Image 1: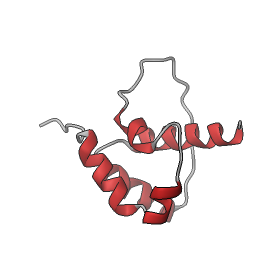
Image 2: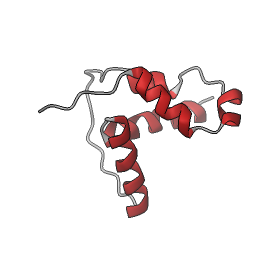
Image 3: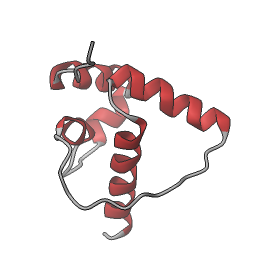
Length: 89
């Protein structure tokens, strides 16, 4: 049985439920998290990268990846992309 990714609406609901209302109303992002989660994986050249995480952080990453029906690598890619965009502004 293959796992299917959650529909964008389900991901948005999950994200909005967990985001405090103050963050939702003040957050202005040109690349919203939900939109990034909905993007299909792009077939680009990839470089393997190893990252050591402390157990509690890995546990949180695993829990959220399962909840969103995404891979941990997907979530890390999104987080790194968002961090770099913020740093480059």
